[in-house]
Picture (cartoon, rainbow, N blue to C red):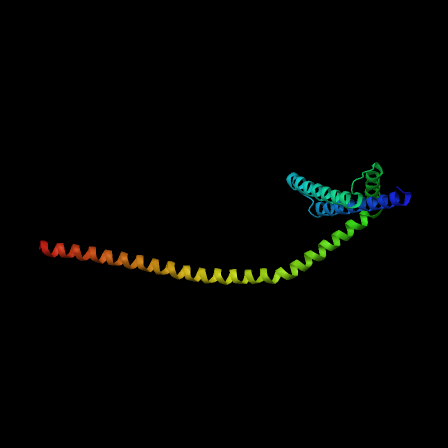
Length: 167
């Protein structure tokens, strides 16, 4: 094994460490955006992070190394993570936050008209239903009043009829 071959592998795994740190910064940014995360949300994010990192690391190991694993490769990953956390992490998190805000603005721009349409439809439907319900309840109330009037007139007629028959 030549030194240039090993140095190339070291640089490749150093870059892997930077990639791992960048992915971790995505999760850190998501946690900072929503400051009150429940413990379950954090656990799920951690599990997703470790699944992604494990998958990427295994792919790197299989593609780059084929069958040889050296300790300096894990040292290179650690150095890449340390370098990224100390030098570029702050800038990456700022970039991720700005990307989030732009995507959020685009999504709101797209969905606000849809939401406004739903609000207008809801208000129209609500007004129509209120008018229909008012008319319905007025009709029921009128029908009840008519039934009461008919019942009282029938009762009055029966009483008068009984009184006339009694005479």
